[in-house]
Image (cartoon, rainbow, N blue to C red):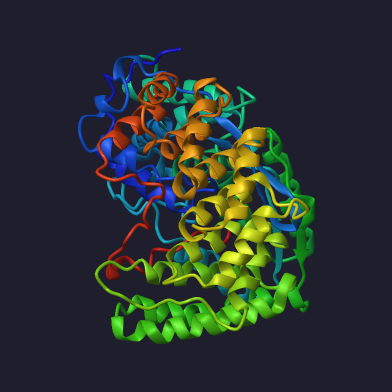
Length: 540
């Protein structure tokens, strides 16, 4: 199925800028952080894809861990397709965003043409929490309905989404908005393993479409007289009585049913006045967060070392708490330390905690698998990782009884390619993974590790495996191209890999122009003025 995008007025420059920022929090970050696509997209978009005959590639289905050892099913869209996805949704934001209610807080546009697509997550969550807090301050007898939509993105039905996009844009057959909507629906049906439902998760375009999908719920609840507030799929309704709270829940149930959605029973409750949960809702989420963020917003470089010291103290306390730690505080700590370390042209030392704390932090990924990305991002930018951290990392990857998820191992292998460069036992483990053709995520990570630090014969092994077509995954093929880029006589193998995928073809072209091989994407540097907004969404 080829789509003609050549006649559509899509803003490819804006899409590239937003995609470049979107990859910061990827569940499965590309080895080079998609720098090949960004470099190619700086020129003519024809260097990235055929606009008159664009063919979306089937996405991969990976699982990423959630709290309590559950997993989130994720659709991993190929790099070039993500650029197209961003461009199509960017076009639709011009029409849809003005309709959204102020009571919807998450993933709200900064501006229709802003490279940084959304308002800061921390600020928007503070508005959401603050709105509830203000209502309870006005009425000490108010009740609060707290609920959450179950498997939200996975259950978005494309036909329903299409109708909502048409309603919000006013699209009619034959006009450009309808052409964009039709192209978007065609792409989504190719990317989803279910064909008729299921949005890719943790991507800027999907987050916007999520707001489109639940906009009718916001409108219905507000028109029905309910004081309803929503942060993506997290919903809170303030009511004067318990009877009103129960009526609100019934309305939520019925409206979600029309969207093929349902509430998460484990996260649904009526919070009554005088209870501990009610009191908690009346208090700031974490005063220490706000104190730190106030300093960060002042943009004074001389104050940041004290912030780092305070964050490191928090981090040690969290590590001491072990499996019972506060995940939101851990995510805040690691995210803010990582962002400070990535400041452009200003060096603020960020070193790993001593006295065994750093290795204990690494070990936490066994018990808190959902925090693997944050832990890896932290060690990725740390000034210098100690031998104890390298040893802990190697032990995790070599331990067959660790129970790590494939996507965890992918992140850990990529980190190992940067800091565990002379571990013979780890190299043997990586060879076993590749030869066994294990889970695609794990194979991709192990292949990059061997390419970056292994013996020259490892490159020959990987090239031979690629030549016989052992790996069908686009992510693995991209990893293989990176792993064998410096192996003599592999041009024919690279060409064959490129012919099967536009996302691989862009990478092969990029690698051919590099003066020296690259096996990792550098951390994205940020100016001091943008530090405050450079934080992951801690509430997803």
